[in-house]
Image (cartoon, rainbow, N blue to C red):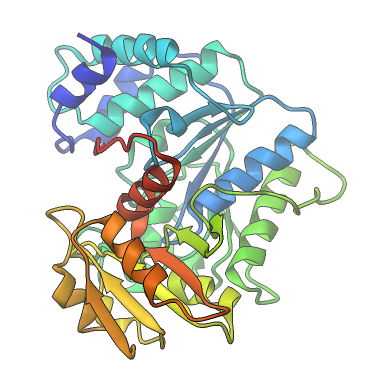
Length: 369
């Protein structure tokens, strides 16, 4: 039985008590320094930027992100290289062994444990750890490090995190422990930060989201390594974020799935006709995406996504179509794309991964962790 098989035998979500379990699970690990990244949007981008900047300083850097686009190995990287199949199997088996007899463990706890052990064994100079959901009860909270960063706050997962910006900020900033320092791209949250945590406001002057992420990443690296000046922030490419997969016709994918994130993506295609291929999970407010599109093609690629007709009802476009799968959606988009237009695929990792796999002729890993 492989380590991945054993991981998938665990429940997707753990029970109450994740922090206590992670403390026990991490006891055998001599942890390396970590920077934790929380937020509603921009976590993955900021994590990749921090890792890239630190590597350019000559540091050995581990990167832990979620979810994956094509395969689980993407989630654990060192120096930009995915963990090998053999190492992934070994570390997942080790983590599963640690969890035996500890009731309530979920998949993300065990995968996070495997990442922390992998980075410790490889003696990386820095582990950049993207938080999954929230912060207070996320397994990544167990990572040790002085600095955490908060990229953005949006009204998301309100049933779990709270119904106001400040409530959600309190849950996310609780990824920090007493004595930690939180670098925030969102201002005015001093009252939401846990006692004993220093709050550094990096929200001014206001910047576009991508530039804000870069500023946040640069300050985190500067603080972590006691640099005299901010490191260079240009030239970082992040898979699945404004990722161009084809030139003729131009096809872009982006994992954006909230109104603010979609607005950021669309700003790159001003005055160009956009044919949108989209899918959306049932917890996403598709009606609030009020942008004008040339053509919208909707599809439901997983059971917990909105039906195509529900998605289409929320969009303003002269032409709307439903598709059964990615291949049909791309065919419809190509057939009706005007000169100078672009095809843009949005809908989180589930859709973007499938589009990437289809265009590359590779396998899409449907594993949900």
